[in-house]
Image: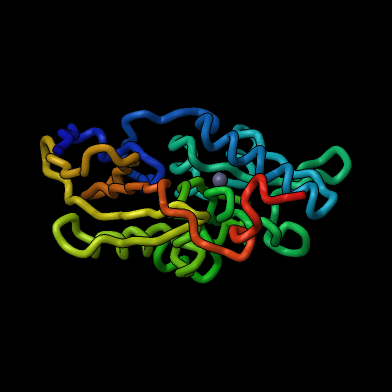
Length: 233
Ligand SMILES: [Zn+2]
């Protein structure tokens, strides 16, 4: 089947690049981002005994945020993380216990958006406190490849919808991804019927389609060969 996407859809989705106008800027985090963020903070505390939190927008804007980083917060997918020490919340710097986030964020769908060593691609100085939600499988793929968002989008566009698609499996879910270039007015997006899908514009020149298949046949393991019910006793 085909979907018809108006041009403004190019600015929606978890993979949008900030810096160009967004059709639906928000203040604060979107609900699915907040849910993932809360899970991550709970696990951070369980792992380190410390308490972390998101920095208040106004405060972070005034003292912390880099100009280009500031553009990304209205997407609703970016959050600045701090760790409580007494009454003060200190932005994480990636060292010591705060390094937990760089190592674990991908599990919750987040990436360090402006990592050290990628300044030439992101155009932004290292900002270890600034996490960006991209969801799955994108966060896992970016972590595995060591890509920043700009590099990841450049890679994805090599998987055109009418050629070889990108396939990967994560936690029992199979993903299939492909790129469709945007037309200036309405883009006709080919998608298979009946598969759960997520579509994200890149806020540049195309769409990334992510299909999921969760009904994979269970893989046979030793645990599966236990006696069937009724055999016991
Ligand atoms: Zn930020």
